[in-house]
Length: 126
Image (cartoon, rainbow, N blue to C red):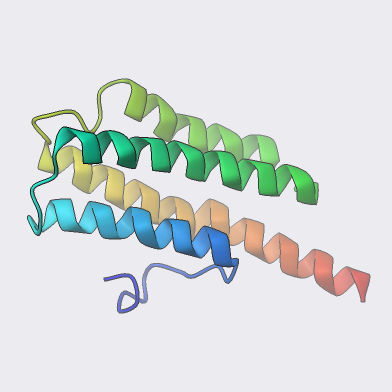
């Protein structure tokens, strides 16, 4: 799914792309019924997802990204969803489909803007 789906942009920031890949593979496998995930796996996924947002936010703050606050606020929407009961047993396919779509949309918008800013900053330093 990750390597074949051209609608999911790769950002060419290795650790972010790898984390996105892991998140999307997990979501895809739930949606397509490839595996029956025990509660422990789902808890682990939620922790991984929260850590991903922390990693991205740390990266943005280190780089001095001027849109950091807006991007972090977008992450907060996902975090609030997780804390409010998303991904609890029994898993609800529509909720996971919505989350999947929102997450892909986040990559294509917020994360893509970050990558464009990084490229511009790099060009300005040359």
